[in-house]
Amino acid sequence: MPFLTQLADVARRTGSPVTEVAGWKTRGHGPQPEVQGIVCHHTAGPAGGGDYPSLAVVRDGRPGLDGPLSHFGLGRSGTIYVIAAGRCWHNAPSTSPRHDNSSSIGIEAENDGRQPWPQAQKDAYVRLCAELCREFGLPASRVKAHREVNTSKPDPHSIDMNDFRKAVEALLEGGEESELSWTEKIVKDLPVIRPGDDNYDVKTVRGCLFARGHVPSAAYTGIPEGLQGWLESTQCDSGLVELIRGFQRAKGLDEDGSVGPKTWPSLLRV
Ligand SMILES: [Zn+2]
Image 1 (cartoon, rainbow, N blue to C red):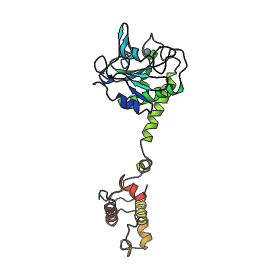
Image 2 (image 1 turned 135 degrees about the vertical axis):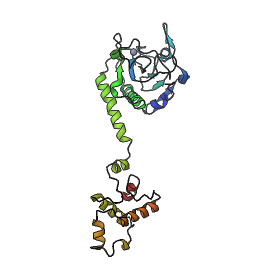
Image 3 (image 1 turned 90 degrees about the vertical axis):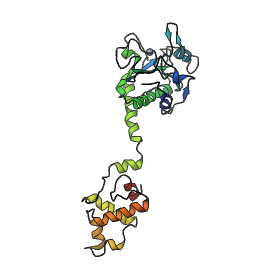
Image 4 (image 1 turned 90 degrees about the horizontal axis):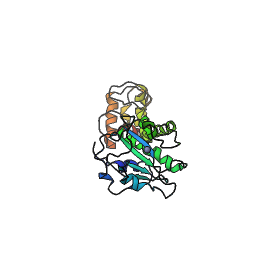
């Protein structure tokens, strides 16, 4: 895996403000070998000092440990700081092979280790983890507190990680649904009607074609019960297929004579 230069875009998908820290795309202890997990930290920085006073430490390191110390910083306001695209020294030694420096992404959230978490910061924390899970194809269970994957660490303080992961999971599940438009949700449950089919949904196609003015009287004159008989037929016969093709031609759709995800919306006018 190369330098993770998509991280700023991933962060922006949270809807939180994003600050790209100069040089982040090439910052790292070499490229990031892989992403199997996410590790949540607190900075243990100063109690005050603005939104993200730990930036210089996380970017440049501290005596005995060179920066970058994590890929992301998270300010008290919920602003996401993109600090590094390569490997960071945020968790060693790790008790999990999926959460060591070579296999995981680190997030250092500003907090002195005791102070309460602002709601905006907590919300952004969950959303960032959810977007990272989505980007790298990880389940919410791969999001861990530093204290869960390193026996000598306490961070991030006072966050119930089971609740945190549930919130991440809810975002992951909710996101899939919201990616479907209203039309797509309706059409998803409709069957594809093909030439030769015989079922009740064929009647829906007939009714829609008639309502849209695509059934000339020649189609039903001469058959038993006339128009009513034509509308009641569950057969996708050659006559109906021709009318479907005519409708598709008029709408600029593929003239395949089947009613599927492209033709249904036009027929239903959704
Ligand atoms: Zn930590």
